[in-house]
Length: 355
Image (cartoon, rainbow, N blue to C red; front, side):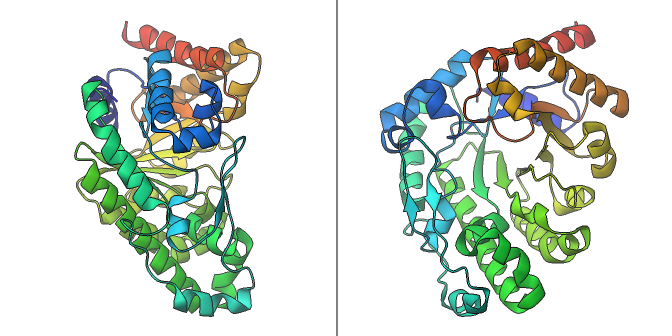
């Protein structure tokens, strides 16, 4: 991001922004295909990664890509630190293999788990090295890395033992569940800290955890909230972005108390209702249907974006508290003309509101 974009995001978090920003989550589900490269080349070739990320910044100068200049290998960083095997493909995202799926054997696995060192274990050291490599090039381009990212502790655990097993675990072996999430939470914290050592310009963290949205409202409050609150509280000087595009809303009433500043959420939840449930302090980052951007109707994208923004302003009384985004990250196959239609809709609304 450039300094003007960072200033706009920070002003938005403070409810002082003079226009609505377009903030789009851009990572490897979308970037390689959009730029005409394979996943393997995007992950393994530094020149391809840099060229592709420069291209999207050039093609969409009015969009703020979040987190921006994100060094990642899909979902693999943290789980590989615990030993999860991974397969890479030319034409698709990496696939993680679980460590254990038999719920009756999870306790032994958890007891034997060693807390990974981000500088030595799994794919994390490779990503840290790439971060260090890119910093001088980004500075020369006038770009800064605004935030560092991690998958959340529940998502990490789900890759280790599967989502179904993780959801059953607190009902059958609650102490084992607590041990597992304590370890994955510490791993996520250390991974963010290691990245922050690299990225001196960072002003925010982003935690992406869809899996904690699978719990009931009661279970979320007792089994998820304490871990997520503690994680965000570990970084008091930074802004806190949270992504959860699960279709449930169990976390919405607790987000502010959890320490979240900006919330990216699913298009399947109504934006006005989300504002009501989440309270007025939180910044909502959403929520145009992502798959709409893969279609052949830019006008439909423009109209839907306009309708969402108008609905938000009608419910909220002002534009404050909104970063216009998709309900989740940019999907594989999102087209340039559709992204431009989304940007144009927000540009026109900003012109109407602010001249």
